[in-house]
Length: 311
Ligand code: RIB
Ligand code: CA
Image (cartoon, rainbow, N blue to C red; front, side, top):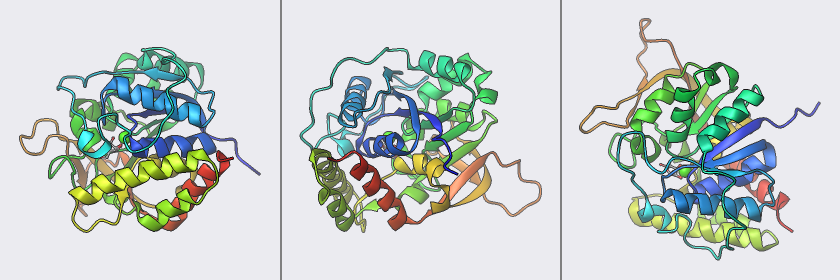
């Protein structure tokens, strides 16, 4: 019996890997809307990129622009990974128009109040999600859960903090303590999922213009990754893991753990503190921490999703 696709809101900061997450979400979920946040690039750029990806896939989902800055800290971006536009490296079309609104938070609240069981899938800084949960505490019991890309057992922006969490630790603290179902695809997982050349060639070999665009994006993304990392075969394709955790759960190993976010540390702000102690007195687990992925099978999901939109 085929189950209906899960209804989700994808909150993102495209972003090369966000773009791949949009493809997988469009293929395997019911995307009620795409909301954008400042992160990899300023909000104007991430919103433009989300609209471009929505257009390339022929999606009907609206794009709503969200937070331009984090809750309390100044905005930070990642042009050193994604380029100034946030999606450098490919010949992209102009967006078909402006976002449906500049009130992503209102869209998230209204959508989750109108329909129970929506999954929130954030793949960028958590500012929009935190603002929605803080403005509408009833959402915590109405949504199906939150499946996010962020955090992990090591950092990429500092030794302790991953970029999405470091951009807005205060927002992440609200999200990790909201009390409902929570899935974390952190760097310890996503670095197992790399766009090595052979995998990029699987995309480039597909028919149609979309495959060329995505292969070019993946080549650019892998180029900046290889220039910055020792011993990495290609870019860690982080964000689709948060989508596949819902659509293809069998691809993952996971542990149920207690995870909190450090917001005060001079050297550790933005760290996701995962309690791995084998003690009886540890705090109640609050998070499905993804610890492993069948990377070849996961990549086939991406190739099949791109094929679906390629003609
Ligand atoms: O640290 C990786 C995360 O930060 C990914 O979501 C990437 O797109 C950036 O947002
Ligand atoms: Ca992202």
